[in-house]
Length: 122
Image (cartoon, rainbow, N blue to C red; front, side, top):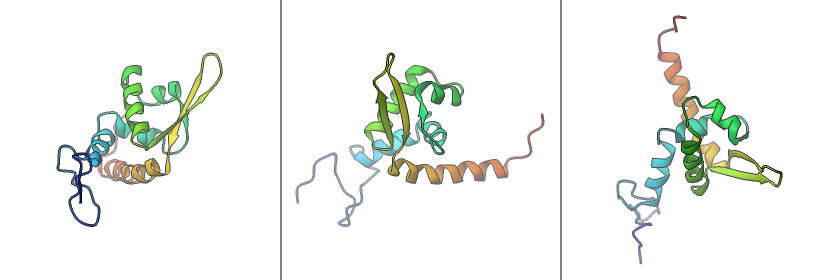
């Protein structure tokens, strides 16, 4: 059995060894759990958004960081990207089935956190 550095597997069942620095699954975990990756997945969980709508929905993210984060999530297969041939081009992003699958536990985590926090004082 030949194994490349990118596809080092932890067991014969085909699971990846995410603790290995060259594991492809580790890169996806890093992108999902990055400072902005989580927020992009949460923002896209209910509907697709154009780039600027997505930027406006995530307070504090710069256009540069949003573009980098989206590029990584598209490359990982979590987010799809559609470019409409208009002037200027309109780019829309949404979650793939994989992204929806990954986003569901994140939503549950956020729901648990907000239920456990003390009530906001306004």
